[in-house]
Image (cartoon, rainbow, N blue to C red; front, side, top):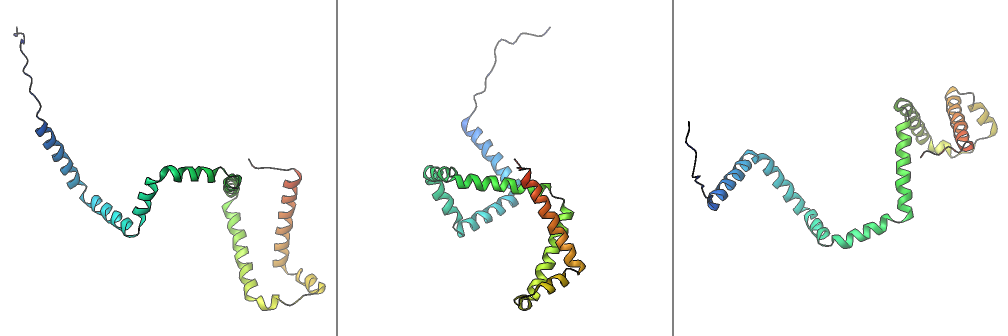
Length: 165
């Protein structure tokens, strides 16, 4: 049978040895992350050169004043409307089919391009007969059909008072 341990020797930790070990660990981490640290230093230098660090420093020194100004600005009704409109716009865009939207934007681009090419001709007034003659053009018929469908759908939405919330 083994002898019972009667006396336990405790080794006192040396503060200097612990600090030396800590510094060794830090130096090892620096050596392992040399490239990342160099890139970080370049970024910090560029931020300093452009004055961004001074702005951040000033912001942090006056953070309480700046914070109260920001809160006061955010509490205004117009900011609430901006945020709500932004959310509604994002919801609208997310509900649209990207292929349909791409086709509509393609047509819009081509229409704007054609209108800008003939800007001098567009300044002259056209009569009722020219408008009726233009309605025979299949491209104009397609655009008018799309606009009429848009107006019909918009009218349905207005009559049913659909609100996206």
